[in-house]
Length: 409
Ligand SMILES: Cc1ncc(COP(=O)(O)O)c(C=O)c1O
Image (cartoon, rainbow, N blue to C red; front, side, top):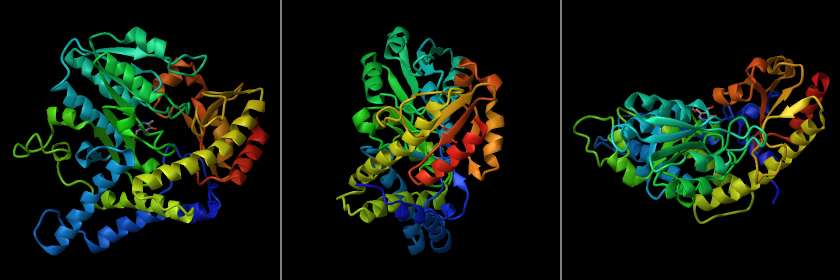
């Protein structure tokens, strides 16, 4: 089944202009259905939740739909395992801090990588103040992969948590998270996965991969500026919350969501569900559930994105002065279309600034994966040039980008 690009692009009003969006790993465009839900909430049900009057009951039901939809989206057993908050960075901080007051103790070891976004490194580094020992799992700079044999050298009976990305926001490489989780669990340790760069491209299944914590940001998955972290129920119940004294410890996720969460954006999340459902329908698929539709949609978009990657990676591989930082393959089993590279004798900013003139939005820098860029010796280049594609990009757009690169590379 091929992707109906006309249908897709019509769902994103921002794509109607002549600007080409290729900084999607920074943030995707929002689906029209998301904006409509936010609008509807603010104009028709903008009252405080939890009261007995009719509109408040409607508003409460609307906001409560967000964790239910998210639980299906990631295949969590229960919506109470979904904590919604403003950003992945803040939510991982919350998990780290709460674990340090419960499950973790001085002398325990945590393994972090050198290729994660700082959100899944810094939060754990902080715990050194409490006597936690941090070990570093470094990427193999030849293969640009996190090697399992290197992880095995770091794991001990003192390891209590491994923090690792599902997909690097620079390399685009898919990590075998299910395999990582199995190994990590065999040492009695937990695993916390950053799924931010993964979620826009592949279906998430927290039960199948058996991860303990999993975070991603909705603003990269066609939604509003909100994020979520999943935690296994038995863990969340043991971890202290940050809410008022009268909010019981078994009240999850509420004990982790103090104050009034962003109601309109929470309701806006349902627009992501609308988008996936209407996508499936437009491609003549009517699954029995949102989850079934999600599986169908991700299958189509990953096939299509592989073709986009084939074109761009294929082009970059022909350039002798270009080094791809990550997989040099376009194979969808190995990577997503987040493609980074450096150019011999040119800094990454100088390349990107010329592309800006063509009304194409790409980006250079370290993308907050500062340790990766430092360890690969790419700071002096001002990081990498990153082109991050989504299924709403067209072959024609990739051709235009290649045409623009041709003038420079
Ligand atoms: C891989 C990855 N992890 C975490 C984050 C941080 O997300 P947030 O802005 O929601 O904190 C980003 C943002 O770019 C990211 O790309």
